[in-house]
Length: 592
Image 1 (cartoon, rainbow, N blue to C red):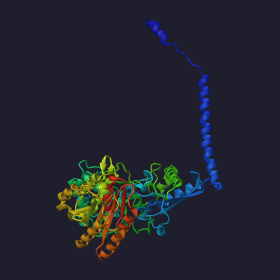
Image 2 (image 1 turned 180 degrees about the horizontal axis):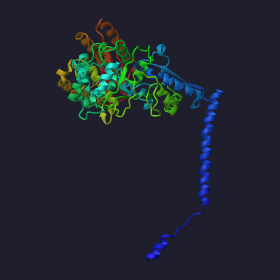
Image 3 (image 1 turned 30 degrees about the horizontal axis):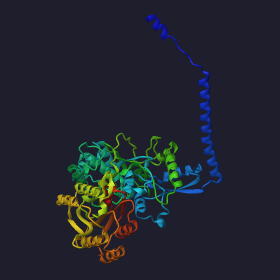
Image 4 (image 1 turned 120 degrees about the vertical axis):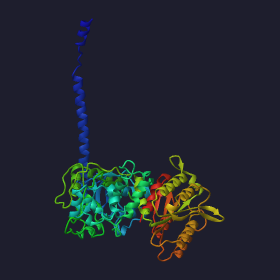
């Protein structure tokens, strides 16, 4: 049996080779035809573009770019234009404009000034996802598709050469150490220079300066139980994290510049330590390169030096953000996608690298690059999610006790309607308000509700008087717990009553604000015209009270709500359902 079995294992059956050859030949012919058709299609479309006879004519793609990358994006756009792109049967022309991200955000959400900025963009290249998150928090319908990163740039600490050498030759610097260093009179002693006094870092407002926002994230991550990112919304309610936030804001220099560029200019003006009122400022590496080479103005007499920090490094991701709106046609949607893909090609990535950004396609760096070491980044900080980024900015804004906010909540019957994920709109509002109370470090907060006949004939009622959060945290949480949907919506009468109360209780030297959360139309009481007239009459010089509105639902009364907010210097945020309230509330509270 063994021998017989062994013989069987040696038996091999062959198959004819000619069918395999025929199948292979057919496959090659099909692939060749498909490839020829694809190439032929490209050639035909380019020929059509060159001939100027695109079936659907010309289409213009407008791209707004943050200044630090605008020049490079324009170069890539010119290279794309030379290819005569045809998208969706349109010959595509592209226009790139350098606009500050803060201006783009305000224009998209509160009204685009075509006289100053030209027509609205179809896509936006900004320095950080933080800006896309803010846009989504104010009106997610303006995001045409998920943003994608086209380059990166780490956050470094900019300072003069001698201080930079002292930090680098010693134990180095981590963002998690900033609260301890900035909170002492001789912080430079850690680096062997006690005679230099305090180690102070300028931290421009994180709501408008992404480098600061990311540095704050890194500092907060060190106060979390895991001592690393990402920072979460839940972490912001922890006492160690709130303490760190309070210490960071308390240690801000008295004359902190409004923006990073201004801080760099002020710092560079005098090489003496702390001559500017601070020792250093967080900055994206690409912006330091541009500052030192004079691309953002005159070349400084002495360059500032970028110190790479230890631990997880916060990194800007420079996302390409497709936009949506009634001014964005299908041709622009597809052209934006095509241009984004072109930006991510190797040759175009090298163009971005030559401008001081980091890309995977090359390790080449621009030369000369005074003050910039291009240190390798081996450990990047995991960024916070879209909601948490708003909460961090809100916590920062309220930590310095500079805000007096009263929230006016709609308790009409429509707040019982579904708000997403099986919860009502009111449930989402109460969760957002409770979270804000728990995360607030300081500042003053009050709570009113409005509906109809809540106190006699009055459609409004004060649940918690406006006062310091620290002294009435539980009262605020109890007040939020009492919010329940009731009847109709008398919005305008309630807004006027709260405005008049805040005028009477106005706190000088602070931002006095009203935040309205509503999901319905005004059902009675004052008309909009009567409200605006009464508000105009009630205004008092030197007592500015900002009214901002969060409108919940797919079809809010945008026009009157926008006018109400804009007339007082506030903003309108629109969220499709209750899930967006938390981020929208934080975004409003963080706005200057």
